Amino acid sequence: MMRAALALLLAVMLVAPAAAGEAAPAAEDPALEKRVIELAAELRCLVCQNQSLADSNAGLAVDLRNQIRERMREGQSESQIVDFMVARYGDFVLYRPPVKATTALLWFGPILLVVVGLVVLFVRLRRRRAAAEPELSAVDHERAARLLAPGDEAETR
Amino acid sequence: MRFALPLGAFFLLVTLLAVGLTLNPREVPSPLVGKNAPVFELPRLHEPARRFSPKEMQGQVWLLNVWASWCVSCRDEHPLLVDLARSRTVPVYGLNYKDKREEALRWLVQFGDPYVLSVADADGRIGIDYGVYGVPETYVIDKAGVIRYKQIGPLTAERIKTRILPLVAELQR
Image (cartoon, rainbow over all chains, first blue to last red):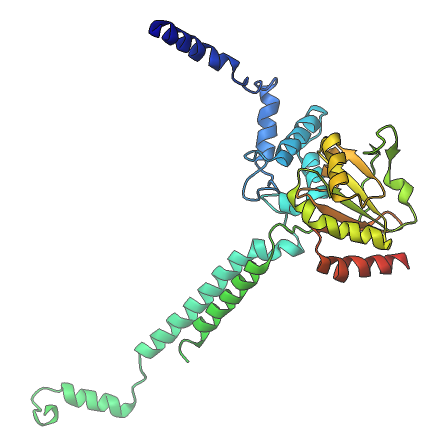
């Protein structure tokens, strides 16, 4: 009885994986699929905004990947497909936004910050150097000479 | 006085970040506002044999509301749409997005049907043309067929009162 149960269990275990859902069919055209994924990685998924279209499994991302694939099959170029996406979802879908008036701060902001930082640094260094070398008047020089002169004990007291 | 500049810069940064926190990252400005509403011809939800195209709406101001029975926040805004339809200020059309027909019909029976008619966008292809990414979405389309406003996410009573209705009134003039 025990042995029969074990045999049955074993049989179920052997059969179960076969009944499990079939893996998604491998891409029919690996070269095309590679291009699809490369382009999808450049585009933002709008449903889960921190993922690219290539990473996301949101319904919309799957649909948009299918759109990319279809359009590539029809012979459209990468830039045509990007234009298609931008026309519908705006520049926001691009991980590398174009240089425009509205994105100028995004592109040039860091450079601007570096320039401002350098200017501040330069001004401060100049000021410090000026403070480190105080102007000495003729009286100061004379006093220093007297202090440094050998043998004159009276002044050092 | 020595710390005036760094302190000022610090508060500037804090202000900037504070404003940033109140913005909604899901509200991506749509490039479609100001453009012609994408053309489509889809089967009607109630009578799949008949089709509907936005061309039929030339000369009228209308709302296109994207909805689905699987969409939870659609339920939140639905009573507002029912009220809006009852007020007869502007016709509301539905784009039933990536939904199953029976479930969509059952949903309308359960929650009320504010739509003059709904069309079925079963595979979501038209949704892509409209730049839909977060159901519900609502478009205000003018007499010439130009999209004048896009609401991403559920409508609120306040949004209808302060944005949608004034815009509709202005466009209807």
